[in-house]
Image (cartoon, rainbow, N blue to C red):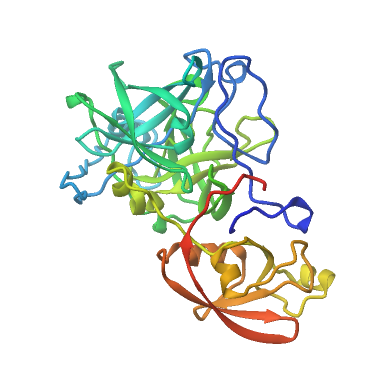
Length: 406
């Protein structure tokens, strides 16, 4: 969904709001939401630092080469005893193989005058050069970063790059040497509902915890820290709690297929509905993050709503499917192309029925298609305006961060 998110009175739930990590100074409960990033107050988390149990993230690398020529490491998963996954590989063996590549990230939060608290999350070693993939909201606002390896070794880290629109970041550490155990990036496009998965993270401050479940849904949507839609999310019932955020979601080969990012829960604890950023999303941006380059995201500039038969009937729309253009951001590519939205869902709003010849059945389909394009690309939209059909062309711009819920 393009920003700004759809207001609640548009007859369809808005993209789930993002909530930043709390601090331990004068803590107060975060506002209630349908989907929470995996961060919680110290009184809930009981974290190791007595503060906010933060988010974790794990990512891996296939055999490839970065822009700087640093090779990524691929490590085999050895067989062993214990319960086996559907492929016959022991979950215990996967944990033994992958857990050394999962680190705890502790951030000190504050301003120019004083520290105001700490947050704890996780990360994944992605290469022997000291790059660690994590969530952007794990390191947001950090004045200092400490990385703890499985054997207890602690080193300082710096943020190499962030991408708030994908809720991803890379932290770099120096002098870690033999403590660096890169994980293997899998292919999230191959994930299917029902696939067994494992998660490693720091729920409630309990570092190195392993949980298991299945892929329980695909193509889910959430909202990133920047306010941009996160689409294609993997849903899992593997128990993930505050502190798992950003941790690895692993397949039965021990490959990372997702980055645990948020949960849907009324109680700020796992009720079996968690979401992970597909690892293929991280693959597209990780080299830019490692080098500190800004990550661009193609942007059209609308707030849209998926048209269902019931919505079409209630609003007397001219189409039974497509994307209703509710709002058009001022100065956006959509406005320059001539798209129209009244700001209150109704029959006067434009309806997008296709883009570059691809039929649009949902907002998610539109966002997914835009993610396949580049900033500066032109797209041709088929638009229904009342009883008329027209073709409009827009030149995609870089996403402009919008206030969440605005």
